[in-house]
Image 1: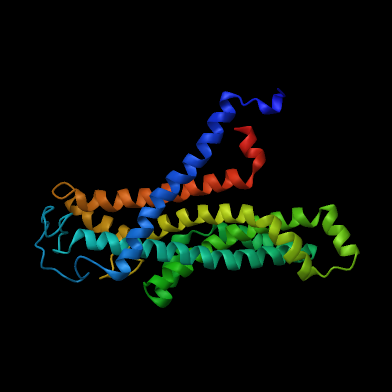
Image 2: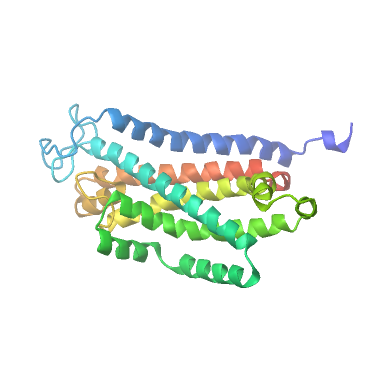
Length: 285
């Protein structure tokens, strides 16, 4: 029997851990996705229904109780799941499109233009997302679109810097030089050589950015810069429940648990995708 056919305990553990990590992440995030999709077609109560009584406990009529205004807590959690995914996915899509475009431009740019783009990206990365959101809110008002744009611009700089590094690395490979020498156009090189080689790393990064975007949306809503009422986000629910956390702790615990579930689930999915995309990392475990 060759040494390659022998699996050490560490390799067996790593081989088993990878699917478990990915499956657990999909289950955690998938539950939130199911709740968000369900909220599109059915809600226990209207988001503006105040008939439940102030801070009522869990009951047959209100499975998780009500908040300080008498609104059904389960309804708010379901709407909050939808808002978290809308903002998170919207910001990641916007940041991915802008970031990949800027990264490709920097990768193919001349030396001085590349340095200018790189310096601009460093400044944008250092610029706090919350401060950018405040500026956008002052100009456009608090809304779902404002949160998506603010978080998307913040993530675009990170994606652009990563794309720039990956493109530079690919363009230095011999097969790209050979393709260019044979007369292949730059658009074809991008389509056939650059994008196929950088997308696995970008997918992992975008998955991580989704978790960051969800947390950023919750932070903005907590500060009153997110989606305005009556559509409650988890961050706003946490802010409103902090005054009654001792008398009605479920109002703060429930959105916090769901927020943790979604972020941890997305991060586990990203970790699983990283294992799939990087065989070297798999072997090192």
